[in-house]
Image 1: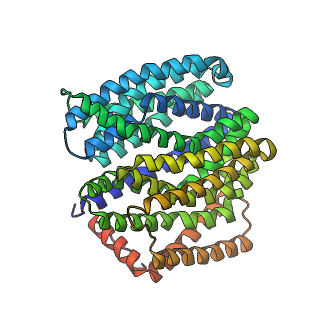
Image 2: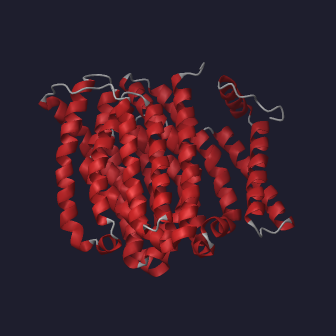
Length: 481
Protein backbone atom coordinates (compact mmCIF):
# COMPACT_ATOMS: atom_id res chain seq x y z
CA UNK A 1 0.00 0.00 0.00
CA UNK A 2 1.09 3.55 -0.71
CA UNK A 3 0.82 4.52 2.95
CA UNK A 4 3.70 5.64 5.13
CA UNK A 5 4.57 3.29 8.03
CA UNK A 6 2.97 5.38 10.80
CA UNK A 7 -0.31 5.76 8.88
CA UNK A 8 -0.33 2.06 7.97
CA UNK A 9 0.37 0.95 11.53
CA UNK A 10 -2.21 3.41 12.86
CA UNK A 11 -4.87 1.97 10.53
CA UNK A 12 -4.01 -1.60 11.56
CA UNK A 13 -3.93 -0.59 15.21
CA UNK A 14 -7.23 1.30 14.93
CA UNK A 15 -8.93 -1.55 13.07
CA UNK A 16 -7.65 -4.07 15.60
CA UNK A 17 -8.76 -1.95 18.54
CA UNK A 18 -12.17 -1.41 16.90
CA UNK A 19 -12.48 -5.16 16.43
CA UNK A 20 -11.52 -5.78 20.06
CA UNK A 21 -14.04 -3.23 21.25
CA UNK A 22 -16.88 -4.58 19.12
CA UNK A 23 -16.27 -8.20 20.07
CA UNK A 24 -15.83 -7.25 23.74
CA UNK A 25 -19.13 -5.38 23.75
CA UNK A 26 -21.08 -8.19 22.15
CA UNK A 27 -19.62 -10.85 24.41
CA UNK A 28 -20.25 -8.86 27.58
CA UNK A 29 -23.85 -8.30 26.53
CA UNK A 30 -24.27 -12.05 26.01
CA UNK A 31 -22.62 -12.96 29.30
CA UNK A 32 -24.60 -10.37 31.25
CA UNK A 33 -27.89 -11.66 29.89
CA UNK A 34 -26.82 -15.29 30.35
CA UNK A 35 -25.09 -15.46 33.75
CA UNK A 36 -26.06 -12.12 35.33
CA UNK A 37 -24.16 -9.22 36.84
CA UNK A 38 -23.05 -11.15 39.95
CA UNK A 39 -21.10 -13.79 37.99
CA UNK A 40 -19.68 -11.07 35.76
CA UNK A 41 -18.59 -9.18 38.87
CA UNK A 42 -16.73 -12.27 40.13
CA UNK A 43 -14.99 -12.59 36.76
CA UNK A 44 -14.00 -8.92 36.76
CA UNK A 45 -12.41 -9.48 40.18
CA UNK A 46 -10.43 -12.40 38.70
CA UNK A 47 -9.16 -10.11 35.94
CA UNK A 48 -8.29 -7.41 38.48
CA UNK A 49 -6.25 -9.81 40.63
CA UNK A 50 -4.53 -11.22 37.53
CA UNK A 51 -3.49 -7.70 36.56
CA UNK A 52 -2.03 -7.06 40.02
CA UNK A 53 0.03 -10.24 40.20
CA UNK A 54 0.99 -10.08 36.53
CA UNK A 55 2.40 -6.61 37.17
CA UNK A 56 4.53 -8.05 39.97
CA UNK A 57 5.70 -10.77 37.59
CA UNK A 58 6.53 -8.24 34.91
CA UNK A 59 8.35 -5.86 37.24
CA UNK A 60 8.32 -3.15 34.58
CA UNK A 61 10.81 -5.10 32.45
CA UNK A 62 8.25 -5.50 29.66
CA UNK A 63 8.13 -1.76 29.02
CA UNK A 64 11.89 -1.51 29.51
CA UNK A 65 12.46 -4.25 26.93
CA UNK A 66 10.22 -2.48 24.41
CA UNK A 67 12.15 0.75 24.97
CA UNK A 68 15.64 -0.74 24.68
CA UNK A 69 14.82 -3.07 21.78
CA UNK A 70 13.11 -0.21 19.91
CA UNK A 71 16.33 1.82 20.10
CA UNK A 72 17.88 -0.67 17.67
CA UNK A 73 21.09 -1.52 19.52
CA UNK A 74 22.00 -4.95 21.01
CA UNK A 75 18.46 -6.15 20.41
CA UNK A 76 19.19 -9.87 20.88
CA UNK A 77 21.11 -9.23 24.09
CA UNK A 78 18.29 -7.16 25.54
CA UNK A 79 15.78 -9.79 24.46
CA UNK A 80 17.69 -12.54 26.26
CA UNK A 81 18.18 -10.48 29.39
CA UNK A 82 14.46 -9.70 29.43
CA UNK A 83 13.58 -13.39 29.01
CA UNK A 84 15.74 -14.43 31.96
CA UNK A 85 14.46 -11.65 34.21
CA UNK A 86 10.82 -12.33 33.33
CA UNK A 87 11.10 -16.02 34.23
CA UNK A 88 12.81 -15.19 37.51
CA UNK A 89 10.07 -12.73 38.45
CA UNK A 90 7.40 -15.37 37.89
CA UNK A 91 8.63 -17.12 41.04
CA UNK A 92 8.29 -13.88 43.02
CA UNK A 93 4.77 -13.33 41.70
CA UNK A 94 3.75 -16.87 42.64
CA UNK A 95 5.17 -16.39 46.10
CA UNK A 96 3.13 -13.25 46.68
CA UNK A 97 0.04 -15.00 45.34
CA UNK A 98 0.37 -17.94 47.73
CA UNK A 99 0.89 -15.57 50.65
CA UNK A 100 -2.20 -13.60 49.67
CA UNK A 101 -4.38 -16.68 49.03
CA UNK A 102 -6.09 -16.73 52.46
CA UNK A 103 -7.26 -13.16 51.88
CA UNK A 104 -8.67 -13.77 48.36
CA UNK A 105 -11.87 -15.24 49.73
CA UNK A 106 -14.14 -14.41 46.79
CA UNK A 107 -11.61 -15.69 44.26
CA UNK A 108 -11.13 -19.01 46.06
CA UNK A 109 -14.86 -19.49 46.65
CA UNK A 110 -15.65 -18.97 42.95
CA UNK A 111 -13.13 -21.63 41.90
CA UNK A 112 -11.06 -19.18 39.86
CA UNK A 113 -7.87 -19.39 41.94
CA UNK A 114 -6.28 -22.31 40.00
CA UNK A 115 -7.04 -20.50 36.78
CA UNK A 116 -5.29 -17.43 38.14
CA UNK A 117 -2.14 -19.49 38.75
CA UNK A 118 -2.28 -20.93 35.22
CA UNK A 119 -2.94 -17.50 33.69
CA UNK A 120 0.16 -16.05 35.36
CA UNK A 121 2.34 -18.89 34.02
CA UNK A 122 1.02 -18.55 30.46
CA UNK A 123 1.35 -14.77 30.60
CA UNK A 124 5.12 -15.07 30.94
CA UNK A 125 5.40 -16.67 27.50
CA UNK A 126 2.90 -14.26 25.96
CA UNK A 127 4.52 -11.22 27.56
CA UNK A 128 7.99 -12.13 26.29
CA UNK A 129 6.78 -12.77 22.75
CA UNK A 130 4.49 -9.74 22.41
CA UNK A 131 6.81 -7.16 23.96
CA UNK A 132 9.76 -8.36 21.91
CA UNK A 133 7.77 -8.21 18.67
CA UNK A 134 6.41 -4.78 19.61
CA UNK A 135 9.89 -3.50 20.41
CA UNK A 136 11.10 -4.39 16.91
CA UNK A 137 8.39 -2.15 15.46
CA UNK A 138 5.91 -4.83 14.37
CA UNK A 139 2.96 -2.93 15.76
CA UNK A 140 0.49 -4.58 13.40
CA UNK A 141 1.56 -8.08 14.41
CA UNK A 142 1.26 -7.17 18.07
CA UNK A 143 -2.22 -5.73 17.51
CA UNK A 144 -3.39 -8.78 15.57
CA UNK A 145 -2.10 -10.90 18.43
CA UNK A 146 -4.28 -8.88 20.78
CA UNK A 147 -7.26 -9.38 18.48
CA UNK A 148 -6.67 -13.12 18.45
CA UNK A 149 -6.45 -13.09 22.23
CA UNK A 150 -9.89 -11.53 22.43
CA UNK A 151 -11.49 -13.70 19.75
CA UNK A 152 -10.21 -17.00 21.16
CA UNK A 153 -11.02 -15.95 24.72
CA UNK A 154 -14.59 -15.09 23.81
CA UNK A 155 -15.20 -18.22 21.72
CA UNK A 156 -14.04 -20.43 24.60
CA UNK A 157 -15.96 -18.36 27.15
CA UNK A 158 -19.20 -18.52 25.17
CA UNK A 159 -18.90 -22.30 24.85
CA UNK A 160 -18.07 -22.64 28.55
CA UNK A 161 -20.96 -20.42 29.65
CA UNK A 162 -23.41 -22.31 27.45
CA UNK A 163 -22.18 -25.54 29.08
CA UNK A 164 -22.77 -24.02 32.51
CA UNK A 165 -19.19 -23.51 33.77
CA UNK A 166 -19.79 -19.96 35.04
CA UNK A 167 -16.81 -18.08 36.46
CA UNK A 168 -14.41 -20.99 35.87
CA UNK A 169 -15.41 -21.07 32.20
CA UNK A 170 -14.84 -17.33 31.82
CA UNK A 171 -11.42 -17.62 33.49
CA UNK A 172 -10.51 -20.63 31.34
CA UNK A 173 -11.31 -18.68 28.19
CA UNK A 174 -9.08 -15.88 29.47
CA UNK A 175 -6.15 -18.31 29.70
CA UNK A 176 -6.84 -19.78 26.25
CA UNK A 177 -6.75 -16.31 24.66
CA UNK A 178 -3.43 -15.51 26.32
CA UNK A 179 -1.88 -18.72 25.02
CA UNK A 180 -2.99 -18.26 21.41
CA UNK A 181 -1.81 -14.63 21.38
CA UNK A 182 1.60 -15.69 22.65
CA UNK A 183 1.93 -18.41 20.01
CA UNK A 184 0.97 -15.96 17.24
CA UNK A 185 3.50 -13.33 18.31
CA UNK A 186 6.17 -16.00 18.73
CA UNK A 187 5.66 -16.96 15.07
CA UNK A 188 6.86 -13.48 14.01
CA UNK A 189 9.63 -13.14 16.58
CA UNK A 190 12.93 -12.61 14.77
CA UNK A 191 15.08 -12.03 17.85
CA UNK A 192 17.10 -14.93 19.17
CA UNK A 193 18.96 -15.77 22.41
CA UNK A 194 22.39 -14.16 22.62
CA UNK A 195 24.99 -13.50 25.33
CA UNK A 196 24.25 -10.45 27.42
CA UNK A 197 26.27 -8.46 29.91
CA UNK A 198 25.46 -7.04 33.28
CA UNK A 199 25.26 -3.65 31.57
CA UNK A 200 22.22 -4.84 29.62
CA UNK A 201 20.51 -5.90 32.84
CA UNK A 202 21.40 -2.59 34.47
CA UNK A 203 20.03 -0.69 31.49
CA UNK A 204 16.75 -2.60 31.64
CA UNK A 205 16.60 -2.17 35.41
CA UNK A 206 17.24 1.59 35.28
CA UNK A 207 14.22 1.99 33.04
CA UNK A 208 12.05 -0.76 34.56
CA UNK A 209 12.06 0.69 38.07
CA UNK A 210 10.16 3.74 36.95
CA UNK A 211 7.97 1.99 34.37
CA UNK A 212 7.02 -0.55 37.03
CA UNK A 213 6.05 2.19 39.44
CA UNK A 214 4.20 4.09 36.70
CA UNK A 215 2.42 0.90 35.62
CA UNK A 216 1.47 0.34 39.22
CA UNK A 217 -0.15 3.74 39.21
CA UNK A 218 -2.03 3.03 35.99
CA UNK A 219 -3.14 -0.28 37.49
CA UNK A 220 -4.65 1.61 40.41
CA UNK A 221 -6.71 3.66 37.98
CA UNK A 222 -7.78 0.51 36.15
CA UNK A 223 -8.58 -1.88 38.98
CA UNK A 224 -8.37 -0.35 42.47
CA UNK A 225 -11.96 0.82 42.19
CA UNK A 226 -13.05 -2.68 41.12
CA UNK A 227 -11.25 -4.37 44.02
CA UNK A 228 -12.54 -1.83 46.54
CA UNK A 229 -16.10 -2.10 45.26
CA UNK A 230 -15.76 -5.87 45.69
CA UNK A 231 -14.52 -5.30 49.24
CA UNK A 232 -17.07 -2.72 50.37
CA UNK A 233 -20.07 -3.74 48.24
CA UNK A 234 -21.18 -6.86 46.30
CA UNK A 235 -20.21 -8.76 43.16
CA UNK A 236 -23.35 -7.38 41.54
CA UNK A 237 -22.12 -3.83 42.20
CA UNK A 238 -18.79 -4.77 40.63
CA UNK A 239 -20.58 -6.09 37.56
CA UNK A 240 -22.77 -2.98 37.28
CA UNK A 241 -19.79 -0.64 37.56
CA UNK A 242 -17.66 -2.54 35.07
CA UNK A 243 -20.33 -2.75 32.37
CA UNK A 244 -20.89 0.99 32.70
CA UNK A 245 -17.14 1.50 32.39
CA UNK A 246 -17.01 -0.75 29.35
CA UNK A 247 -19.74 1.23 27.63
CA UNK A 248 -17.61 4.37 27.99
CA UNK A 249 -14.46 2.65 26.69
CA UNK A 250 -15.45 3.21 23.07
CA UNK A 251 -14.51 6.86 23.65
CA UNK A 252 -10.83 6.00 23.92
CA UNK A 253 -10.16 3.20 21.48
CA UNK A 254 -8.63 5.74 19.08
CA UNK A 255 -6.36 6.86 21.93
CA UNK A 256 -5.26 3.28 22.60
CA UNK A 257 -4.51 2.74 18.92
CA UNK A 258 -2.46 5.93 18.68
CA UNK A 259 -0.63 5.15 21.94
CA UNK A 260 0.42 1.75 20.59
CA UNK A 261 1.56 3.15 17.26
CA UNK A 262 3.30 6.30 18.47
CA UNK A 263 5.34 4.93 21.39
CA UNK A 264 8.16 3.35 19.33
CA UNK A 265 8.03 6.28 16.88
CA UNK A 266 8.34 8.91 19.63
CA UNK A 267 11.08 6.83 21.23
CA UNK A 268 13.05 6.92 17.98
CA UNK A 269 12.41 10.64 17.38
CA UNK A 270 13.48 11.41 20.92
CA UNK A 271 16.72 9.51 20.40
CA UNK A 272 17.30 11.61 17.26
CA UNK A 273 16.50 14.78 19.24
CA UNK A 274 13.72 15.62 16.76
CA UNK A 275 11.41 17.15 19.36
CA UNK A 276 9.54 19.32 16.86
CA UNK A 277 8.19 16.17 15.19
CA UNK A 278 7.22 14.81 18.62
CA UNK A 279 5.24 18.00 19.35
CA UNK A 280 3.37 17.76 16.04
CA UNK A 281 2.64 14.07 16.50
CA UNK A 282 1.28 14.59 20.02
CA UNK A 283 -0.92 17.53 19.01
CA UNK A 284 -2.38 15.53 16.12
CA UNK A 285 -2.89 12.53 18.40
CA UNK A 286 -4.93 14.73 20.76
CA UNK A 287 -7.12 15.82 17.84
CA UNK A 288 -7.81 12.36 16.52
CA UNK A 289 -8.44 11.01 20.02
CA UNK A 290 -10.98 13.76 20.74
CA UNK A 291 -12.50 13.14 17.32
CA UNK A 292 -14.21 10.13 18.87
CA UNK A 293 -14.18 10.92 22.60
CA UNK A 294 -16.18 14.15 22.45
CA UNK A 295 -19.21 12.84 20.49
CA UNK A 296 -19.25 9.64 22.57
CA UNK A 297 -19.52 11.72 25.75
CA UNK A 298 -22.32 13.83 24.32
CA UNK A 299 -24.20 10.81 23.00
CA UNK A 300 -23.63 8.86 26.20
CA UNK A 301 -25.20 11.59 28.31
CA UNK A 302 -28.31 11.51 26.11
CA UNK A 303 -28.65 7.77 25.52
CA UNK A 304 -26.61 6.11 28.27
CA UNK A 305 -29.46 4.88 30.44
CA UNK A 306 -31.31 3.36 27.47
CA UNK A 307 -28.12 1.69 26.18
CA UNK A 308 -27.49 0.11 29.58
CA UNK A 309 -31.09 -1.12 29.69
CA UNK A 310 -31.15 -2.77 26.29
CA UNK A 311 -27.53 -3.90 26.05
CA UNK A 312 -26.90 -5.16 29.59
CA UNK A 313 -30.36 -5.82 31.18
CA UNK A 314 -32.61 -3.63 33.28
CA UNK A 315 -30.49 -4.19 36.39
CA UNK A 316 -27.56 -2.45 34.71
CA UNK A 317 -29.43 0.87 34.66
CA UNK A 318 -28.40 1.23 38.30
CA UNK A 319 -25.06 2.32 36.82
CA UNK A 320 -26.49 5.24 34.79
CA UNK A 321 -25.25 7.95 37.18
CA UNK A 322 -21.79 6.38 37.33
CA UNK A 323 -21.80 6.16 33.52
CA UNK A 324 -22.34 9.91 33.18
CA UNK A 325 -19.22 10.58 35.27
CA UNK A 326 -17.13 7.84 33.66
CA UNK A 327 -17.71 9.39 30.25
CA UNK A 328 -15.84 12.49 31.44
CA UNK A 329 -13.11 10.20 32.79
CA UNK A 330 -12.44 9.02 29.25
CA UNK A 331 -11.84 12.57 28.00
CA UNK A 332 -9.30 13.16 30.78
CA UNK A 333 -7.84 9.74 29.93
CA UNK A 334 -6.96 10.98 26.43
CA UNK A 335 -4.61 13.61 27.82
CA UNK A 336 -3.24 11.52 30.68
CA UNK A 337 -2.51 8.48 28.53
CA UNK A 338 -0.83 10.24 25.61
CA UNK A 339 1.24 12.58 27.78
CA UNK A 340 2.56 9.82 30.06
CA UNK A 341 3.30 7.79 26.92
CA UNK A 342 5.48 10.64 25.67
CA UNK A 343 7.26 10.95 29.01
CA UNK A 344 8.17 7.26 28.93
CA UNK A 345 9.10 7.26 25.24
CA UNK A 346 11.36 10.29 25.78
CA UNK A 347 13.19 8.30 28.46
CA UNK A 348 11.64 10.15 31.38
CA UNK A 349 9.87 7.33 33.26
CA UNK A 350 10.90 8.84 36.59
CA UNK A 351 8.82 11.93 35.90
CA UNK A 352 5.95 9.77 34.69
CA UNK A 353 6.02 7.89 37.98
CA UNK A 354 6.15 11.02 40.11
CA UNK A 355 3.01 12.53 38.60
CA UNK A 356 1.20 9.20 38.68
CA UNK A 357 2.20 8.49 42.28
CA UNK A 358 0.55 11.69 43.47
CA UNK A 359 -2.66 10.90 41.61
CA UNK A 360 -2.63 7.29 42.83
CA UNK A 361 -2.37 8.37 46.46
CA UNK A 362 -5.33 10.69 46.01
CA UNK A 363 -7.26 7.95 44.16
CA UNK A 364 -6.89 5.40 46.95
CA UNK A 365 -7.90 7.91 49.59
CA UNK A 366 -10.96 9.07 47.64
CA UNK A 367 -12.07 5.50 46.91
CA UNK A 368 -11.88 4.57 50.59
CA UNK A 369 -13.81 7.71 51.48
CA UNK A 370 -16.44 7.76 48.73
CA UNK A 371 -17.31 4.12 47.93
CA UNK A 372 -18.83 3.27 51.35
CA UNK A 373 -20.80 6.52 51.29
CA UNK A 374 -21.86 6.80 47.64
CA UNK A 375 -21.29 3.34 46.15
CA UNK A 376 -20.27 3.07 42.49
CA UNK A 377 -21.02 6.76 41.91
CA UNK A 378 -18.37 7.55 44.53
CA UNK A 379 -15.92 5.25 42.76
CA UNK A 380 -16.48 6.99 39.43
CA UNK A 381 -16.12 10.43 41.02
CA UNK A 382 -12.83 9.40 42.62
CA UNK A 383 -11.57 8.18 39.26
CA UNK A 384 -12.54 11.42 37.51
CA UNK A 385 -10.83 13.68 40.05
CA UNK A 386 -7.60 11.72 40.02
CA UNK A 387 -7.54 11.26 36.23
CA UNK A 388 -7.81 15.02 35.75
CA UNK A 389 -5.09 15.54 38.35
CA UNK A 390 -2.81 13.04 36.64
CA UNK A 391 -3.34 14.67 33.24
CA UNK A 392 -2.54 18.12 34.64
CA UNK A 393 0.63 16.94 36.38
CA UNK A 394 1.76 15.03 33.27
CA UNK A 395 1.26 18.18 31.20
CA UNK A 396 3.41 20.15 33.60
CA UNK A 397 6.20 17.56 33.51
CA UNK A 398 6.16 17.04 29.74
CA UNK A 399 6.17 20.79 29.11
CA UNK A 400 9.74 20.89 30.39
CA UNK A 401 10.84 18.90 27.32
CA UNK A 402 8.43 19.89 24.55
CA UNK A 403 5.67 22.37 23.86
CA UNK A 404 2.46 20.51 24.68
CA UNK A 405 -0.45 21.91 22.73
CA UNK A 406 -3.75 21.04 21.13
CA UNK A 407 -4.94 22.16 17.71
CA UNK A 408 -7.56 24.72 18.84
CA UNK A 409 -9.33 25.15 15.50
CA UNK A 410 -9.73 21.41 14.90
CA UNK A 411 -10.83 20.74 18.49
CA UNK A 412 -13.32 23.62 18.26
CA UNK A 413 -14.77 22.09 15.11
CA UNK A 414 -15.10 18.73 16.91
CA UNK A 415 -16.98 20.32 19.81
CA UNK A 416 -19.27 22.25 17.45
CA UNK A 417 -20.09 19.12 15.43
CA UNK A 418 -20.82 17.24 18.67
CA UNK A 419 -23.22 19.99 19.78
CA UNK A 420 -25.09 19.77 16.48
CA UNK A 421 -25.22 16.00 16.88
CA UNK A 422 -26.67 16.40 20.38
CA UNK A 423 -29.47 18.61 19.09
CA UNK A 424 -30.29 16.06 16.37
CA UNK A 425 -30.33 13.14 18.84
CA UNK A 426 -32.42 15.08 21.38
CA UNK A 427 -34.96 15.99 18.70
CA UNK A 428 -35.11 12.38 17.50
CA UNK A 429 -35.67 11.14 21.06
CA UNK A 430 -38.44 13.69 21.58
CA UNK A 431 -40.27 12.67 18.41
CA UNK A 432 -39.68 8.92 18.66
CA UNK A 433 -39.77 7.41 22.18
CA UNK A 434 -36.79 5.16 22.89
CA UNK A 435 -38.87 2.08 23.64
CA UNK A 436 -36.83 -0.64 21.93
CA UNK A 437 -33.25 -1.39 21.01
CA UNK A 438 -33.70 -0.70 17.30
CA UNK A 439 -35.02 2.80 17.93
CA UNK A 440 -32.05 3.46 20.24
CA UNK A 441 -29.61 2.16 17.62
CA UNK A 442 -31.34 4.42 15.10
CA UNK A 443 -30.63 7.38 17.37
CA UNK A 444 -26.97 6.35 17.60
CA UNK A 445 -26.68 5.96 13.81
CA UNK A 446 -28.43 9.27 13.08
CA UNK A 447 -26.29 11.12 15.62
CA UNK A 448 -23.10 9.61 14.24
CA UNK A 449 -24.05 10.55 10.68
CA UNK A 450 -24.93 14.12 11.67
CA UNK A 451 -21.64 14.49 13.54
CA UNK A 452 -19.58 13.16 10.65
CA UNK A 453 -21.30 15.29 8.01
CA UNK A 454 -20.97 18.50 10.02
CA UNK A 455 -17.34 17.87 11.01
CA UNK A 456 -16.16 17.03 7.50
CA UNK A 457 -18.01 20.07 6.17
CA UNK A 458 -16.48 22.60 8.57
CA UNK A 459 -12.95 21.14 8.95
CA UNK A 460 -11.23 20.74 5.61
CA UNK A 461 -8.00 19.55 7.24
CA UNK A 462 -9.60 16.49 8.81
CA UNK A 463 -11.70 15.99 5.68
CA UNK A 464 -8.69 15.96 3.36
CA UNK A 465 -6.58 13.71 5.62
CA UNK A 466 -9.33 11.13 5.96
CA UNK A 467 -10.13 11.27 2.25
CA UNK A 468 -6.48 10.76 1.35
CA UNK A 469 -6.10 7.85 3.76
CA UNK A 470 -9.29 6.17 2.55
CA UNK A 471 -8.12 6.61 -1.05
CA UNK A 472 -4.78 4.96 -0.29
CA UNK A 473 -6.64 2.02 1.19
CA UNK A 474 -8.53 1.63 -2.08
CA UNK A 475 -11.90 2.46 -0.54
CA UNK A 476 -14.21 4.78 -2.57
CA UNK A 477 -14.86 8.11 -0.88
CA UNK A 478 -18.64 8.76 -0.60
CA UNK A 479 -19.72 11.63 -2.83
CA UNK A 480 -21.92 13.10 -0.11
CA UNK A 481 -18.78 13.71 1.97
